[in-house]
Length: 317
Image (cartoon, rainbow, N blue to C red; front, side, top):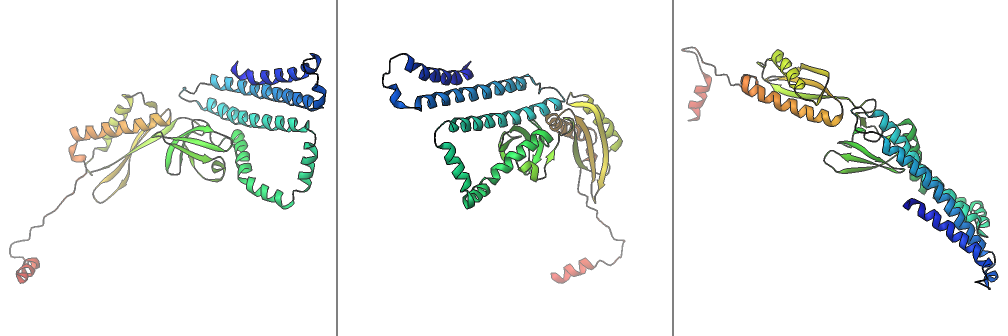
């Protein structure tokens, strides 16, 4: 009801202006010329534009409120929300511009002023075009995002060395909620012109990885069984992917990688931490020899063998 007050108010003002001459309360009303009618027309135009904009905006917001983002795989809801949100913003701006333009056309001299302004644009028009290019590029990028959807609301993304979620998609900027609650504000055109990672573009499900650098005596087969046991013990795992492999070998350690899938990126992060902690605790308790260590090997010379290091040490004394 609050959203309906402004158009109703404008309509009442316009009706009041048209009613005054017929009441006899303003005998000098005719001296104002056409201005009362012009003002009443502006009020009716404003009321109509505001009512149309508010009606469509309210319907779109109601549709957005019905979407369920709490599902494990909310891809469809995010696609719909992204398109509706961007179209809603464009609709409000478009209705506002059309309403203002319509109101200006009823004012004497404004049409002629507009025509002469376009006719004499010249260099000033070019300068304005150059200055407005970032705004136009962001507006066009917003339309591209609404329909091609490289990003959607609540997508998990990695950009500018930060990891977070798409929180808001405006006409000219995008708000990314970083994992530590900071907000990264980027122009809409960034997501059309710059490469970035979108972890949930096709599905909310994601595979997380955990790495360990362990001794060569690490029981890889037992670790593989333990990984499956750890995953089955937590609801963070979606029951799909679980795997453990030796991915690299070094001079003193081997590199072991565990993979496990989760329903969404927050669950994947928590699952990775859970696996890492449980596996380390299990290795410490049952296989301490698997933990990385530095080895020193002492060579003993056969009896009577020549040791040049001892001779060199004697000379130094």
